[in-house]
Image 1 (cartoon, one colour):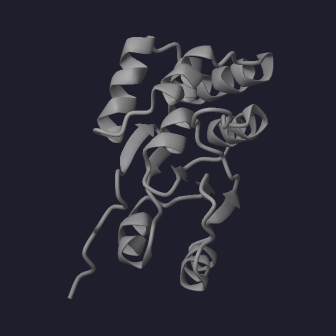
Image 2 (image 1 turned 135 degrees about the vertical axis):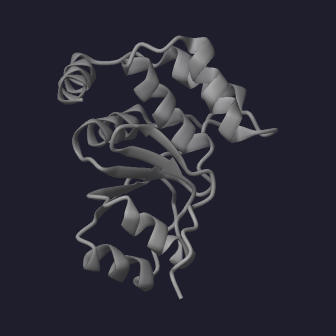
Image 3 (image 1 turned 90 degrees about the vertical axis):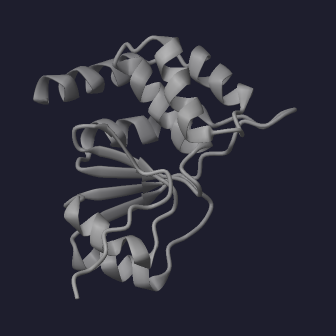
Length: 165
């Protein structure tokens, strides 16, 4: 019997060679294999199971865990340094899967900032964010994206990536 191709929760294509989703598991392995991933960026506090790490090794997929805090009242805000590292990884290491637990808020912030680097309008960025967040939109995430100020390094990496497309 042929393996079922089941994408992870909230799976989507961000751009050529970059995908987003919720936390992948065993039922998603056949699907992930079809993507021919080079790397996976885990933004959540959860670590992979031994089974998932074995799958990554067998398929020559490198993985990085950068715990990005969610934007929550009153004082929690995503760490701009972690976000910066995630953006650099997303502009360099492709094909890449970016994910957090459910593929909504933390992943949405990183993707929103990538969109900002690609000079999308805030209206389009927020529409995409809301599509994945559903009824659980965090206004602070949108505010974080709005006030994100790309560094010259971000811009340079984004331009290099655009030139490669």
